[in-house]
Image (cartoon, rainbow, N blue to C red; front, side, top):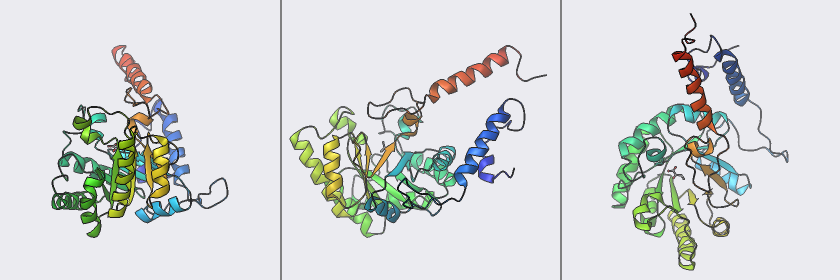
Length: 311
Ligand code: KIV
């Protein structure tokens, strides 16, 4: 079997010996399948997003216009990027959630531009076709459109990613316009905006009062009019997300925002059940936390019981 260079990087170090061999063969087989050049068709027979061409902002807009859902997932390193792509993710979001799920911080506020650049470079190294979006961290863009531009230039030049994401609605519209007018792809993020947790006092649902509901509708219009290429809607009522999706002209990306958004995004650790601390709107599709702990425990038992390594 011919092993692709990309596969070697995710194989366990002892892929050719002992008990990992079956797992390694299965991993290779799965990767080979996902890398095969079959045209992707939906259940209707319609040809879906081309699985080999690089994803662009235009691809995502076309998917919305054709009623196809796009799949976004956070990623923080080359391995998570490769695995998400092998599973068919269209967009890899290097979220500043990395502060909480990877770096052990208690909010996203201490995340720095250096952290974001470091991790985004790794994700870009791991992707082949997915669109990579980098969150601009707290304090790196809010002061002025010029500050946001300088930060975005650093991110785009130093990482090779495709777009930046910034939190905020109407008050950030001038900044989004400034960036968009200068050729930068900007993803806006409204609803629950974790960088404002100190102002709101919680990570609770937004848009529940009439006032917030109407403000979020205005926010969505403002960022769209300013030239954002996509709009993340986090933890807002499903009917509000549906209303926004039907009135804006750009793809909406829901997380805790109901089924009517054009795309869905989840945090890697929540989806895979690694954090053990999922928000209510982010169901785990697996329990990798248990699998990982159990695997390490079995190996540790073998070390202590002198069964590893085998003589
Ligand atoms: O930081 C992040 O991971 C995000 C997603 C939750 C949308 O912004």
